[in-house]
Length: 311
Image (tube, rainbow, N blue to C red; front, side, top):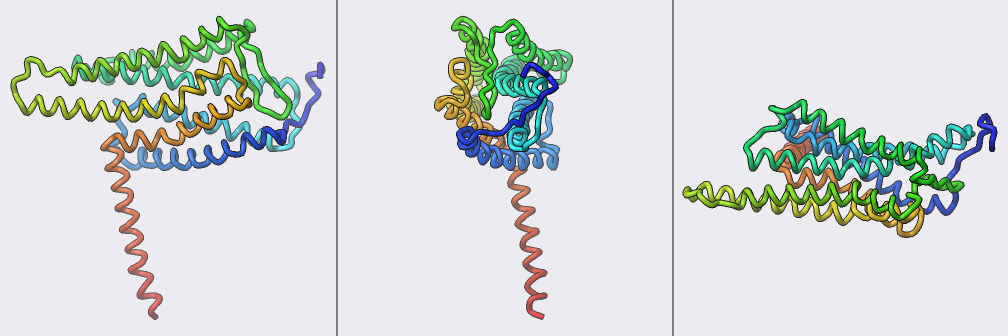
């Protein structure tokens, strides 16, 4: 095994296959739902807006997690002999990108809430007036967590778990490292995201100094809309997404607790496009238009088919 030219056949073990199989079914369903969502995005220009770029970035991270799962599933399903060096590199990538992509999502939602607050409270369209800042925010969000994982692996702050026939995982080596990871990957971005969300809700709800009843009613209606949308989205997000981040530093992914967290995480990925589409009127209109088009096409097909069958 010291010879890097040697190779080994990497296959799922029987026990690991039992764990991966339900994840495979969830990921197939998630892929179908995501593809339907992106078809709507391509087909309807009304949903392609700069102000929704953080939501699309979030959904792209979902897609990358699905692609990662399928690639690694095929990698361990296909009986090929992989050199030890390449297997070690793939193992590190498998462990790093799972944690990295999930960590990204918390900071993407933080950026979304900051931009929303600037738009609502200060009437400041950051997407059109500060595009350079938006680009820099994207770069910082994507690269800083990635380099953080690389540095942690380089300085042995995390240890690679590589059991035969199972998924690879990176586990922090000590309790202080685990706590630091939780602070920067979960508590800081989630707390700040909820803080800016509360600022938005408080601003919209505050109608002091507004004498026109129509404006007051519109503000209160908008407040209810944001409250319902945010309440539904963040409740499901915290329930399904949080366990994966909170438990990762303490449990191996293929342990019983780790498997449950993975299942919840992939369920979250499956629900993300449904929730976003259901809570945004523009997507609801796009889905309705697609449904009407399919109904018309089916009706025309039936109308043409019936006379031909009567001949």
